[in-house]
Image 1 (cartoon, rainbow, N blue to C red):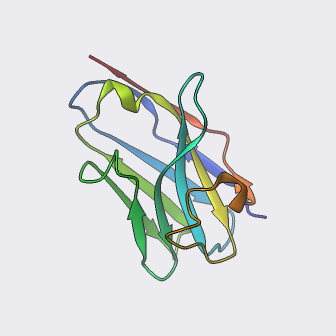
Image 2: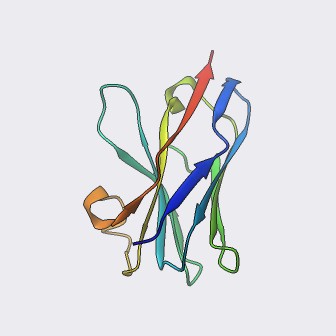
Length: 123
């Protein structure tokens, strides 16, 4: 298991931008961002594999960009055009196994999780 530390959350107005970072203590194949709003289940936001494959949830496609620096073991999430419904705690997740289009959204497929960072978007 790798240790994950997120940073970059905060409060912005609708239409604003934030960038989240997740530093991993070692190499990992699959990395993803999840979020959990109050009273809701944790949901997948975006996924990035070490071979460059990325995929996004429909509700963030075109607004969020996931990227990773494999040399530094850092995962990023650039969030633009933020909406109040994006308000949630955002979590970084990682797993050494290969995750695919059909499996990346499932939280139980990740063995490592960060502590979470709050993102609040006001209208």
